[in-house]
Image (tube, rainbow, N blue to C red):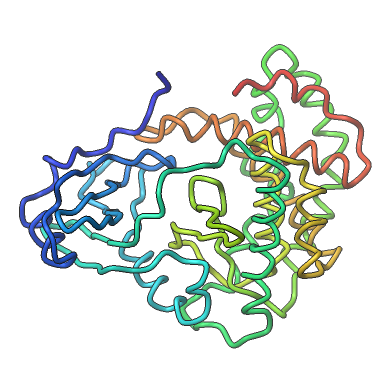
Length: 334
């Protein structure tokens, strides 16, 4: 069985938190099933209530002082409140939020179990078009002041920092026996990708609300509507960044190629080439920077998904910028 995060059981949730949950939901909890979707150790449960209804419980709780895990539930709660008037159609319904016994709790509608992956062309097209409608909804609108306008820029600096804060030789280790080949490839293509990623840093408005973490573990496809959760990192920025991150994540889960995702998205909302190119380069730079690193305590699956996204994002960048084929990616393990 794959290693999973060490999440609390319902019996480990403080009694005062369980009692307040039932008070807020107006019914007793008859069954609480731990939900393993994302890659963090937040307390997540699908709740079956005595009145026949269902709800989803998500909470952050006290962690050891040396834990690298971040559980920004309070920040996510604020994002829901600020953004629901604008993009509530693409969010689950909120049922309440509170703090008890140092637990930050968010209650929302239960959207059911994950059905993606596997991806199909039909699911990918519906998701891509809905994602474009989500971005189109806020294009050029006045956005909440509390949203960062610069978060995406961090992804436009990884290639530029190679040799300063990280080394290509370390990143190449992820290819194992083909590490020398990987390092040579990275050295050859880095000037092109370094130049391209700067366009992400220089991206100008009009901006949109960015979800900033749109992977299959953070959404459900409900008919033709993409319903996203996990909003703590939502910000304002170029739609091209969100779309590029989403497209490679779909492909990393054996879904359609990113180019097809872009085509379906542009059936609804056109993209700017320079901002898209900068995003493709920047996201490939991020996973090159991150995927080779040791596992993080409490996040046992994180590096695996990063390696999968490394393969998808770097291969896409190679095609987009007409670079030599990165054959060494075949040696990168899951």
